[in-house]
Image (cartoon, rainbow, N blue to C red; front, side, top):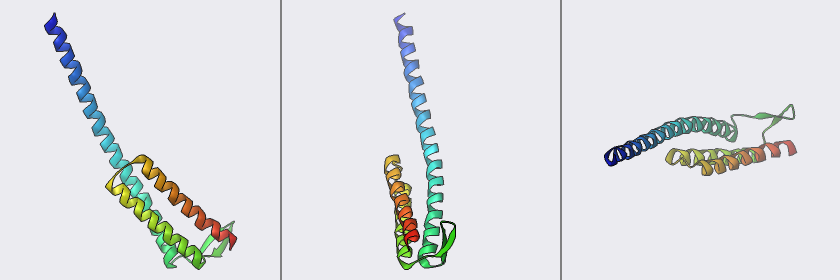
Length: 121
């Protein structure tokens, strides 16, 4: 009976090892999908911010009205583009969810600040 007990332990260990390997593969696959989607969205933010900063976009909608984008606002959009680029670089090199969320919070704050300034001018 001792031999069959050993076989069960080996089988359970192998079972657990296979499940761990499966989880690792799934996490890696899902992480790559999330990373790809996140990078694509950040690239779109970067491109929009760059267009505003360069002056390609002359007006924006604020409180239902089209208003000109000021030089100070363009400077703020340079910061948005820079932060988006840094976030993209960070995500491309490592995928730390908490760090990414912190950087996305900062990016969101910069965008909110840039939009707030447009309503004050």
